[in-house]
View: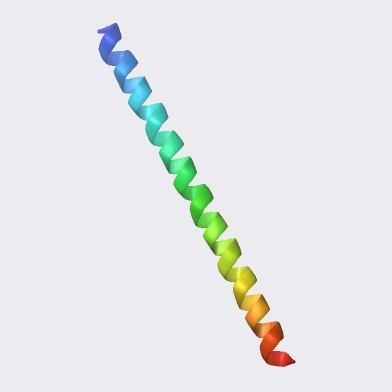
Length: 46
């Protein structure tokens, strides 16, 4: 029983880490895209 609980907790922690990493990557991509859009906009205005 304890072995199963240990495995489940390990899997849950791993999933949370992966989800957190994905969220970090998505936020980073959004920041980069937003930065590029602002840069493009400033270049077009000049």
